[in-house]
Length: 286
Ligand code: ADP
Image (cartoon, rainbow, N blue to C red; front, top):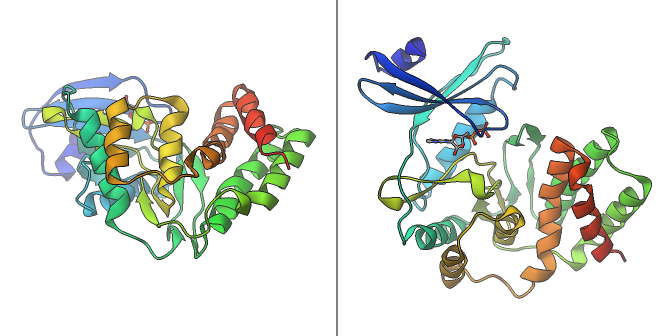
């Protein structure tokens, strides 16, 4: 730790290193030196650019000047099987009665900030530890089908988590996708992995986003995921909608956008998510 902190110019003694529970993938620590408090993640079993990609995503969000993200002080890239470090700003604070509202306003501002001309990204990212390949598409339906649903379906097949019936329904949904999702929605910069565990409260009750998997796409894809596992206050939805209203087809498209994240969970954590996947596929059976 001490050596890594010296890299960022903190030569002061390390006073406390406290492991943090809760991360699925990495070891996480609260680290206190005589100078500063840090959040540090380490991992030995991820690709060399795993933390660089996380830092890039945070940087893209920061560059919009819309919603707070922790400052990244250092990330390792290495080709060996060495332990990688990511050092960032420690975020801590208490919710205020404005936190939910500000989260909604700022997320809407992020989604309205930059309009990409294309969908996807010029970079591979990760969703959890699953690789998310990206290229640019000029059509959101094709991006969502070819870069999101199909790769997760194929991964589930490899893992033996796609029964014949499930696969048949998936394939038919892929064919019919254009009936449900928009071809050219606004290409918003999305956090891309926004479940309730990926926002934190900082000083003054300010909401921060962490752990992004950024992509340019339909903002409804992001909002649909916030609703899948909960963790977002009602005033978040109110203030978001006041700034960036959800289109009329939101309720119709929501399960299809949630399907991607459920497939990711099926692939990461197993059949426990199978029922939810099947429920959605049954709803859209042609
Ligand atoms: P993982 O990438 O392994 O899922 P997370 O980034 O989610 O790990 O972090 C694990 C825990 O640390 C979570 O409980 C999260 O709330 C907390 N955490 C993440 N980033 C910070 C930060 N910058 N400051 C304070 N706590 C953080």
